[in-house]
Image (cartoon, rainbow, N blue to C red; front, side, top):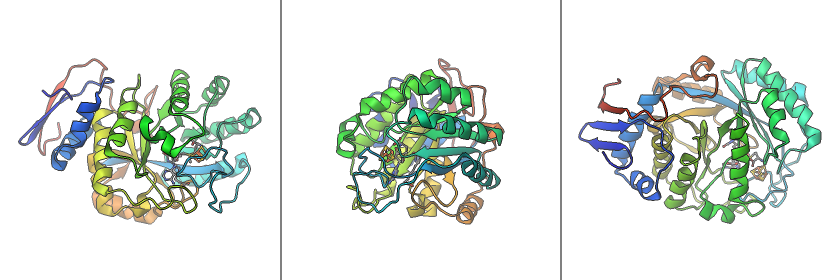
Length: 361
Ligand code: SAM
Ligand code: DTB
Ligand code: SF4
């Protein structure tokens, strides 16, 4: 057994399914650098061990407060530091949000994710935010918010309103962070994640691939997430959407194979987390997305808009899912009392599982 807990030989992968929080850079980098077929086989074996491989969860996004953000994230259309031509708006009306959520539910989304272009929410906005959470919950959907940094005061309000997930990405490695954002630190991001976790709200945290970072940055970003006290329940992996007028507007597109390797590594190091193939799908071929699902991605954003950019249209996604034999994950399949995990494996269970090629145990 290798020190990653996974051994591969001709036709079978031996996997130690215990959840680890002590990954080293060396072993993560070794996995990332494996021959592509070995990496994919390993990731897919881990995926099958923990999830239905033909089921993908569908979330939908809405920008509830667009633009005018004081942070300087180099990738973002919504920062006041960049001239992107985006018109800023005020916080959306609760009724409008609920009517959009209803449409998202009809389209098959089981989770509604609401995003605000804030450094942090203001006290005066919290009542409306909580009404949105309560209203979306009442529709029978899971709720997710992304509002920037949170204070201790915000936590009980969000939790009591029924918030299921909080999205707060670390975006890249600690090393590369200040090349992308200077108005906050990597440690600020981790502080908010710790608050969310302590409040008993599921953590949604991932990053962006293709911002000019190195493979080592991608590995280190995943290492930070995998070595948190609990793995984030949801790990969104975005491919940079280059926005004209931002410092990253001219960044060349990431090699798709590097992107798939990142998904595979996330699946291996965080075996029970839901990995979301997030922004950037309009620029991905069917084949690239199929490889991502094989490597362990099992969630997407549906609906033809993300926050300020386009997402594949409903019929395009439906055609691809049909071609691949993928079905949407029903809410009942993701719900557990505490979090969105599909299969309970005790943290310390030392289960060595032998998987043979083509045999689904
Ligand atoms: N203001 C909040 C924050 O920064 O946490 C919430 C909204 S912010 C737009 C949410 C996430 O979207 C970012 O952390 C980033 O990972 C992703 N994102 C933003 N712009 C993107 C882009 N152009 N391409 C890919 N992902 C992007
Ligand atoms: C995440 O990781 N990706 C989503 C969600 N969390 C909030 C946002 C993607 C934004 C893409 C660029 C835009 O539409 O402005
Ligand atoms: Fe603001 Fe979030 Fe955009 Fe950064 S990513 S500029 S914090 S909206």
